[in-house]
Image 1 (cartoon, one colour):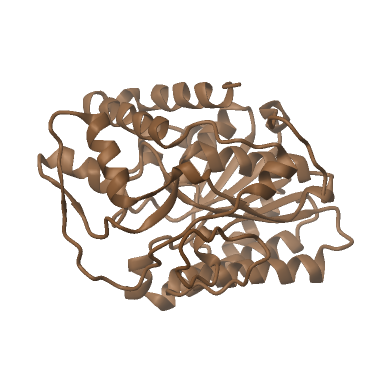
Image 2: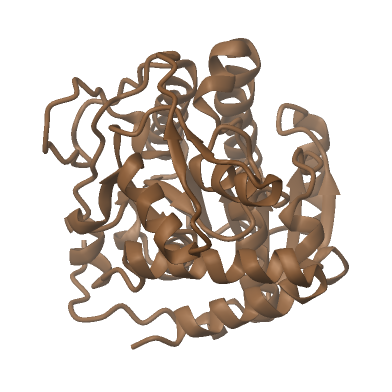
Length: 361
């Protein structure tokens, strides 16, 4: 593994005219990623279900005309394989998933089919497509066996055994990737990596059962913010933080297998806060006497404590977080005010944030 040292320097010009396939492109992270890639001059194809929220960021971001957007189910191998055959991607970034813990208790079978068999389908397409040089499977920080040990940051070599169907299915997705990598790609000019990201927040997330969207919905309706579990600790990071690393991994491992691996993509310790602290920061940044109420509902099992050890990506890529938690909350509030006042300006606001983030020294 190479040690880059210093600040990481992602060169987005690498992506100009590269054929990049993004699964899950209509989702929150997928939309931000595609906006970055399109702006960088990449030739982008997305494969995903229709955006499931109303409103949805993919529509607000106005990028469907600037890329090849294919609506399809990741469980449909034949349709997915046809996309690979026709597009011949060089880089594949797999983000498609059923991503909500509580929904996984309601629909465990669908969650496993999407998150496990969906990963098998993508990797099988990569195996059968010689044009692919760089593959990244985006999983989650929840893949680890978590006994709620206080102040224990998980390292990449610790056991994988997520508790709930979402977390466990992502553990399985990791293991599928490991097997394909060892079984089929040792002698192939194609690098395989996974990225285990922390809790990603930012402007444009409208999903159910996530704290920042709950804050925005409370503002829209003029109600108090409802917080179901204010004492759970999570590693929060702005959406552009992990996307920067995903792009860096895919760039560096393209033609250089020494960079492939399994990476925690999480913030520094100072950005691991309780949900209650996070909402406090949001209400202060927003102003207007916004308030929240504790309505702990018991709910299904979720880990009380979760933190990632991010030393590996710092060592390999020289990465350091650019926006810490207060910056992140301020950016979310800025984005939300644009959304509430002038939705047509959302693409410009996204580009402004991308430009500021990617050019920050």
